[in-house]
Amino acid sequence: MRLERRFEATIVATQEDRMRGPSPPALLRIRVFDLTLALLLVLALAPVWLARAVLALIQTGRIVDRAERLGRDRRPFARLTFAGASPGRDWPVLFNILRGDMAFAGPRPLTAAEAAEMPVGAEIRFSVRPGLFSPYRLQRRTGIAHDAESELDRRFVERLSLRGSLGLVVRSGIAALLGGGGERPAPPVLDFFGVPITNTTMDEAVDWIAVRASATAPFPGEKALVAFVNPDCLNIAYRHAPYRTVLQRAARVLPDGIGLHLGCRLRGLALVANVNGTDLFPRLCERAARDGLPLFLLGGRPGVAELTAANMRQRYPRLIVAGAQHGYFTPAEEAGVIARINASGARILLVAFGAPRQELWLAERHDRLLPPVRLGVGGLFDFYSGRMPRAPLWLREIGLEWVWRLAREPGRLWRRYLLGNPLFLYRVWREARQEAKR
Ligand code: UDP
Image 1 (cartoon, protein in one colour):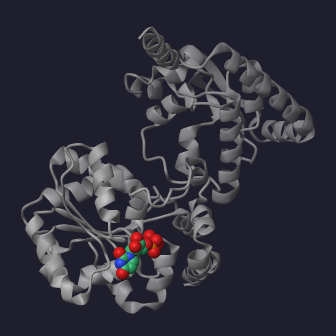
Image 2 (tube, protein in one colour):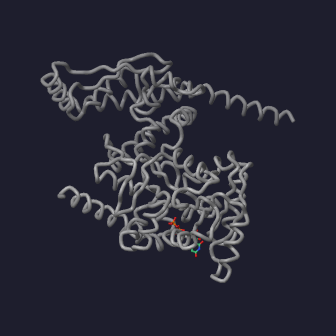
Image 3 (cartoon, rainbow, N blue to C red):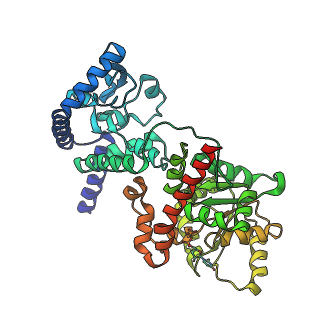
């Protein structure tokens, strides 16, 4: 009994510590690392730095620009950049790090106005130095920043350690190399091989589905299909006209995966977010539970959809899963399956047969189905049933979830990723070149 109480007390103490932020020894280790790395970089880069400083002086008559930001404990400091628009503007940040205004890894330094907008409960982000690399900027770069910045910061600060900081620096470096940066225009609709893809955020996509699923009046053209496309799907759409037509007539096509990010980059455009089905699903379940929108899960091996339903009900107790059915039924059984879906009262039907089969199946049975929103979700139930582990976050943050999937099923997926991804990028590049010529 006493042991139990002591155990509980330890848990409470640990939770309180977490609320208070990182421990002083962890902060000290990080500071030593920051000082050492910044000093080494200053020494190594001294000649280029000097050249950039002279360039700033010639171009603008001054060496640095100062912008006021809030640091640790909301103390204001001047964030330094080299004057002028030439590359290397950010280099003086090493002085900010040496002076102790900033760290290499930490929450993004905010302006006073941005800090005022931060929600209550975000205060923990000010218990550490702001960072040159932040968890939010990293996830934004790969398009997976689906949670609020304050939430990502809180998680980072609560677990702050030297290893965590080093990890963030390395992952940010890799993501920058693979994904690039810079400001590019983000049109509301992207066109890849004649397929219109909605360029939107995860929150907006979930909201759009929920609104459509709860509406009683039919929508224009009674469009109901929501499809997710990755480079593999677009390669299929490129040569398979029926699938392309289905996507063109869909209510919405959403961008899935880092390949679309790279494709946009090749065309000088920005992808707002990687709105893939796997990340969307739990958010949709949360919203469906809140709004009382029943789901029907169709597809996957026997038992997998049921297991997914049970897992999601455990996570969101108010979620209504009106039915679950595996995807290996015979043509003779199909009418029964459709009757079950329609009788279930589901407002959202998720079909997991893999692309393009699920989209073609849904399009061919469009008039026979009742749920107002129908999503093609690929191998989604395999992840949420626990049958197939999903790639760890650090791999997703650097845009390499596909490497994980390839490593687990090389026989089935090598063609899709090793040949398909480069082929997709080549086609996008060729299309962009032809567009530029016109
Ligand atoms: N599947 C199905 N019925 C079929 C063939 C496949 O339900 O006749 C399921 C299969 O069990 C798997 C999913 O469809 O869960 C396809 O997964 P895949 O990873 O190929 O889809 P992707 O996400 O890559 O489109």
